[in-house]
Image (tube, rainbow, N blue to C red):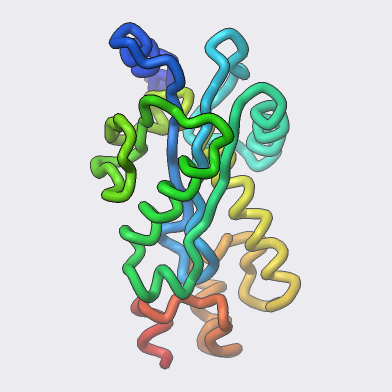
Length: 204
């Protein structure tokens, strides 16, 4: 049995309740040992929603790239980050919420309702908001945000991989794969590693 794809139901419920501009928000990069945590906020045009939007993890890189380009053309998009230093200082949950807050603040139009992937609403978000557990599989707006955030973060990790070869970041995006952990032992900790994360902390 295939899982149903995300749709516009949650957004439509918000519209029926009187909201007009609805943004979906998601982040990627909580689990990696290095690199920023990246969030995106996306306001879709209800009349022009690209087909095939889904949780970014369920799409191929090629499909994500194609949808990324489409979304830039037909949706209102903002992408933001929290740095490695902020992750180490605040903790990964607070840093990912900070990235989400920044993504919403970066939208050229202020949404009047925000759909957040997960079970918590960031403390700094003062707008009307709703947490949607596994939202990237339920709401097309959150799915769109997951695609934008993942595409941008993956590109950052490919760039960093060229500056710090050997860790396999262009393939593992900084997640603690066997190759990454082995390289960490051999090559040591880079300035882009999260020092508060256990495998890195243990090495220091």
